[in-house]
Image 1 (spheres, one colour):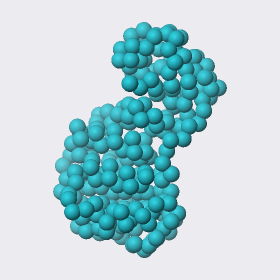
Image 2: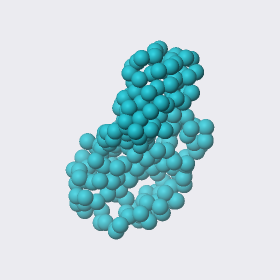
Image 3: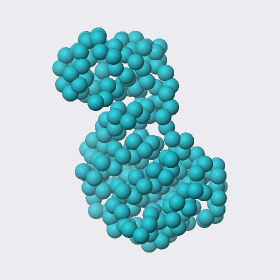
Image 4: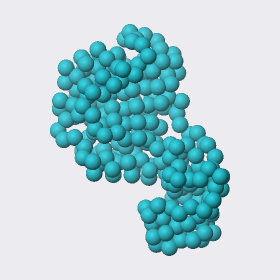
Length: 249
């Protein structure tokens, strides 16, 4: 069980710090931590610190933290995923896995076949799952989750941030990968091999039922390449993990 706790206000030079209500409760009620125990704190921005619990009860936990140090466990490729999120229970598992795989940012997409956009309440719960998953997998940078966005707005934003247009199937050893998961795309292994040194990646994954033909056309016009995941059709969360694993590896 984890002895890591999220402390967004972790002092750079160390010092006395009170954990948040959620983290204090987890330490006391779940981990049954005691005064004198040594734990690890992380700030979600790439730093961690060793700390000693000085006082603890059911609602409060005060620690004496050492100096914060930068510990990088991020993949070399900075990944942003635009995903039409599945139902809440599956979305929670999806976010947990993508956090572990090192995805930097997730933008929930609203597509033509989206049945119900994610609520603010769900997005808040998903962000808490990011924290819990980061504690477990020893990641020091929190994956960010955006507000939901229509796919056309996402494509316009992604297109505007590209340094230059690239031709489909062109080898881009140091440029960003731009993929849309689609059955008609070329094999993921081929696409991944050509982008193995990519430092950024933007990936689109559609809802159950897939992207509409219009959305696929928009994506291609915006510089995205169709990437296929094999002969079988995956659920949203499975497709996302397959793509992230290829990029994180």
